[in-house]
Length: 638
Image (tube, rainbow, N blue to C red; front, side):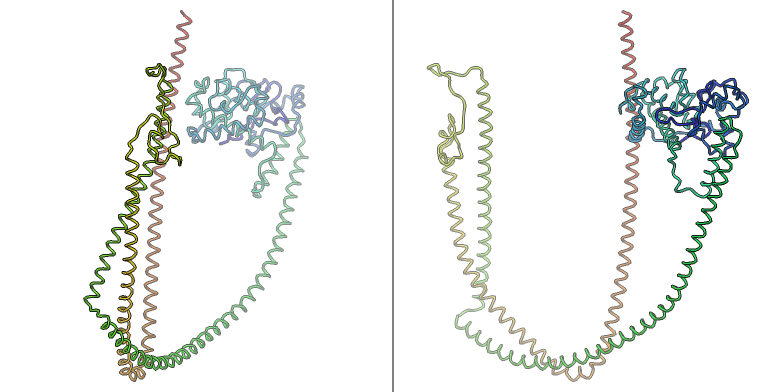
């Protein structure tokens, strides 16, 4: 938030390069209260002058030679004096403060304004002008000297002629009161002498406010304010403001003739009016052209609309005729095909019936020749099921044995790795022994153990004493495991061979039985269907021929009714789907709202805990500082 123009826009001209000239005369070089010149009596205040200038002008000029104006004032131009009295007491209407709504306790916001302040100081050569080092940490944990230099440098960019003579707490508070700092209630005068700690965010916010104020004035000096969104009233106000500014500069230079500036203002008004008239004429011409074009398009649209209506009617008639012709053709072709198909099926049925009878007689003869009875077939099926279950058990046992064998191999590998690690650790301990046991001859006994390539080809099957030096293993374990493994493999191979032979026999028998059963079933079903179809066709041929037309119409109506019912049910399902989707979306929105609310509660709790922690930490730091000071005093007294 920026201050009002009454007291904040105090500087007459930004420094061109490195300095900013002041609008104040030589006896009055600052905006501070209580230091007015003897010539200031009766001079109008700055707020009154700003009100007379429609409250839009600035005290800052862009090219007036103030040294000349000061000389004229010193040589007798006492009738136009310094504006210093305007700053002796700020206006009561603009001196009110408001509650600071900025989230200064927010770490992210602090980092943001701290970075912006740091960038502005670096960009405008703070370190070079003040010869004081500046880092990112300076704006996070500043010393009192850092704060004082930054504040003085920022304010001197507003009022270069001001001189700081009093203590920093008096200077800061009085200056903020003069320039109408909007959040003055958050600044405690007694705490300005020690700005660090938990109150630093308020002072950082105040410095950032001064940075924003300087940026605004820099933009005004450089005429960087945007005019692309100006209305006509804004343009007229700018013309009038330029006239007021030039007249006021002439007033400060002891000039009484403002007619030149007035003529410039009138000329600007005339030029602006001419531009408006030209723009209106162009717009009127464009409007006439567009209106003529619109009339032509409306006439064409009416003709096109009538032609489209006729075309749509003709297309509808054409589609109806085509549909009628196609329906007649389909009906004709349908009955011709039905009649021919019935005749063909009757002939084919007679032939198939004869073939089926012959095939059945042959099959009965073959079954009698083989001597098979239904009981034999049932027995064969039972044996097949029994063999299948035995095969499944054998497969399960085989898989279990294979899994156990793989687990044993993996366990052996892991044990070997663990043995190597254990031997390595054991050897390390042996090597670190300060003294080793000796034998009867006085030689040291080698207690180390080493593996002699246990996985090498030449060591496979060797006894443990040849692989592990000084370590004896059970001699019977490996041969037994190998023998057991070979036995399992032999049994598995034998079972697999037997299973394959039995499976082949079983499959062959099953295929023969299934083929015969399927053939018998198919022939019987075909014979039955053929008889039924033949009887039905013979009985109903004449009746169906007589009632075919009525039945077709009835089926057509039934089909339409079913299509209508299907469309209605489809519409109902779509409506239910949409309502369900709307309910789902509402539930999602409710869940999202509750989640955001809970996140906000968690964030508030975190902020409270953080503030509490920071407060406790600052109290501990103060107490530690107090204890150290007391200790230093005690040591000094001793």
